[in-house]
Image (cartoon, rainbow, N blue to C red; front, side):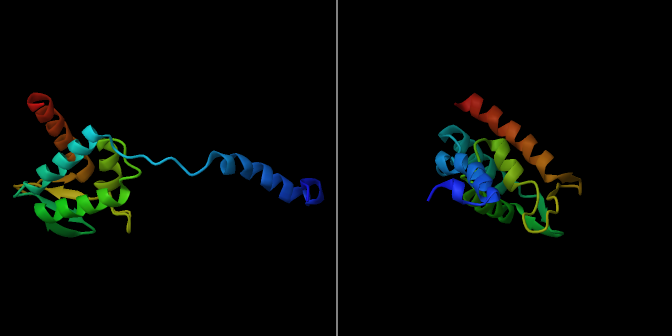
Length: 133
């Protein structure tokens, strides 16, 4: 059966879908070995922040629990992550369920957006890795 026997709207739909069908499955993104190492070090750094509290959906979690949660989200989103910045955006910024931003409470009660905090921590990790190789 040729397309000229199909109603116009179906021919148009087929023409719109054809490029996507020919393109094959969507490309998968994964972090390079060096970015993966940076993300792992960032998660480890968070786990060691003994006085920090991670606030997710109005509930406080200690650093070890926060690191476990970030690792689980990293494992879940790994195919969409290329850089450590992607990791922060997808895994450490907001709840996927509620959309509510994550917060971090530091020693002394200072409250920060988790994304700002994580980007600062990422800068420290990158500096450490440049120094130590």
